[in-house]
Length: 349
Image 1: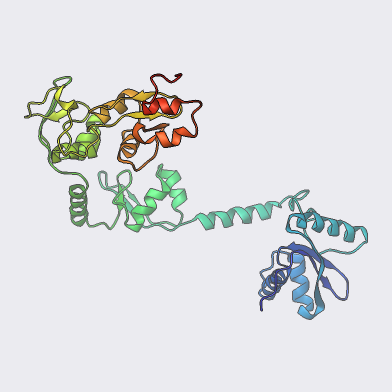
Image 2: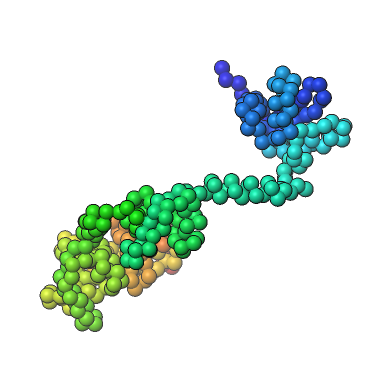
């Protein structure tokens, strides 16, 4: 049966000299196992204790629990024992004399700072292959630190790592130096075709009369004219009449026609029921164009559409008026809920 962990203060004492190492842990037994493993392998972060262990051996030390302490009081009690032993003249292996702030009153030497900086750079260093700029033929030879490369050439380290790993074709014109251009061009063309490079007919804006000629790339069309890809797709599929005033050019639709919903269409330009705002008490009568309603009131058509379809109960306080009665009956003052049901002539009756 596993033993319950003991939270408390412990010490490691050199039997002959009495020199002591004081520590705290939420599980002192497990911490002692960790100490012994690191000391046996020469990896302990306390150089004084490591040197003594290497010189005298494990049998020259004993481990003991000083006291059991609640977790939230561990550091305070560790500091108490550090101060108490120091006051008694006991020599300590502890490098830090402040349990709450181990580096207080201490500074890394210049050599330590140099080693630390070098270790951090090595940790961040990620080897990279050679790159080439396709347009100019400029090359970057392979190296060991992608972070430094990014700073020197003004490149994003993460994007260049994707290029190196093959998950991105290029970054700011830089490609893998050993890239197969024919294969790369075929993959890019296939990717564009699968990612929205599909033809579209000529479009006409019923508000301004502007015409957009037919083209071969819906994604490019949407980027250039600030249009939503899903809305244009709905227009091409025949389930949405217009988007931001744009309609199929060869249709006879006018500005008045685009507000009339398509029979059987599931687009947001369909009819909508009455809404009621629980926060302000405002009501919206039923209408025929939810998209237009959202534009006029600065609402998200997706959120209002979910309320309309029953997926959400409310959006920005707006709920379906036909189902609000049960909820409002317990919350609204007086007989307002009766007025909403139409049982009273006015709210104050």
